[in-house]
Amino acid sequence: MSSDVHEPLFWLAHRADPSPGTLIRFTSDGDEGDEDAEYEDPDPSTADLVARLRTVDTATIDAAALRAALQASVDTAMYWQEPDGTDVIASHPDVIAALGPIAELIMASEATRGWDAPRGAEQWAVDWRSPDDRAPLPSDSRALLTAWSEQRRAEEVRAGLERPADPYARWSGTWWSVPTELLLTRGVIADALELVEDSMGWEEATIIPVRGSGRTLEIRTDEDWAQLCRTYPLEVTASTRHDWFRVTGRDGRWLIPDWARVAGGWDAVHLSTLAYLRCATTLIEIDDEYASVIGGWAPDSTIWLTDGAREWDEPRQHWARPQNADEWTRQDGSNGGVTTAANRPRV
Image (cartoon, rainbow, N blue to C red):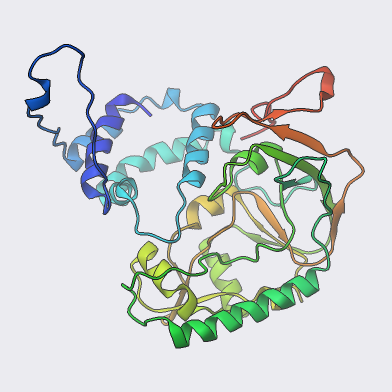
């Protein structure tokens, strides 16, 4: 991010953040009186930020910059607390208007060409363990979905009895809207390693080649998700009320798809990268009474509702990264040497 934009955004976001924390300032060594010095924080306005956004040199927005921004968006996706200060400022109408022309240029670039693409034939699953701990892919999807459906319904009943109806109550529950037990695959290895919500900081990963067939439902817009909820509704108001109220500010009834029923008509559901950016963490209106949130998913990812996918006949790959590092490196020495996740065919 340009420093011209970063400075006003930082101070505006700090002021708008519901939990801004404490700023620690470092002064130069040896300067007398620094301990008692009084500092006046910069006080930019939204208009100042908008003016700087309108002067952004779009020539500097290349594939690497877009990749970093996409990764930051996934890293900061939160479904259990209020929007932070940056989100608050980004939602200001004047800021949205200033970002519009930049977004149009980005979407017309070659780097975003695949962001709205359907599920590709080549897929990859990730197991956050060493290849020495060889584990099979999830299977028996019908049993997994049946158990998931029973658990969500039971949680909803318990939540209705035990949790307060006040949406402001400091209570957190199940905020994800997709079954985490099922096989999930990605179209690009780097995405499987780098674009992960609520990451646990894993340092090893086994990448598994997967191929699948059957009917795939494409989620490209919020209306696609809303229609899925209308067709296969599962009410989760009591169990998601507090988390999704904090995220969206809406106090009302909530639905997610009943995935066990969705599996009766579809083998897989794919969320495009562009749909993720449009819809994840945002309020999706279903009708006058219900709304929903896409939570716990990922860009360009496919959830397999039936056993239509299997491990392919290519070898598994071992990837690792040093502690507290970002870059993943392939460890099995293919292609005559070490490769990194940055060597990917597309953003």
